[in-house]
Amino acid sequence: MDSSQTGSGRRARDFAGRLARAYPDIGCSLDFEDPLQCLVATMLSAQCTDRKVNLATPALFKRFPDIDAFAKADAEEIEPFIHSLGLFRRKAANIAAAARIIRDRYGGAIPNQIEQLVLLPGVGRKTANCVILNAYGRPGIMCDTHFCRVTRRFGLHDLDDPDKIEAVIARLLPPGLWGDFSHRAIHHGREVCRARNPACGHCPVGDGCAGRLSR
Image (cartoon, rainbow, N blue to C red; front, side, top):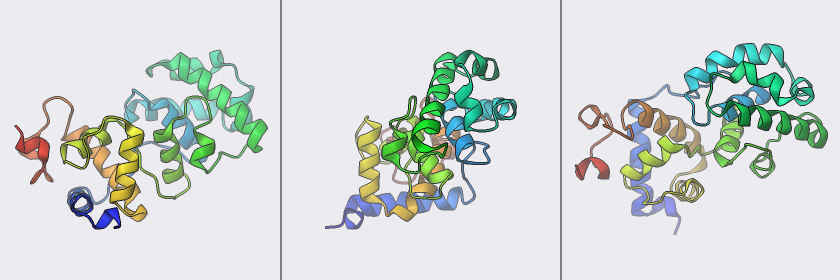
């Protein structure tokens, strides 16, 4: 049986509908103009807020406007532009290394396949899905910490591994819903269904939430 037609699938679609009604206009909160900027901004967003990333990237992208500029740079040249972000040294090194691979292996074009993106330094499935979804407009599930927490609390799974959670949600929802569902679940996790002190009393989608009922 198609997983989307099971009880869990109906629950997932119900939750997707609740999120859609609560947050009809939520989309990607990172600022970017092309796939390269989307990739770099998403790499920078690890363990950092999108707001902080958006403050740092205008100067970064002005100094490094294309893949060649990033590929020619040493990590030390990138670091001053992102020193306000977490893990900035590691991120600078990964960005420079990824840019060189993209230039040399892919002719400067950002890969549009998850299997290629995850081979780049500093790029996991969450980042790869973000690029596929937001830069290329194809279905993707962005399993960040907020997404994993929210979908667990609503009873869609009892897992901790993001890759396994992605696979579960991919079975429960049709691809056409993956992107909007991801953006809305992440927003809900940031603003309402927080890790500590979730605002259950003000939750717009909480009826039937397993986490809320257990409190």
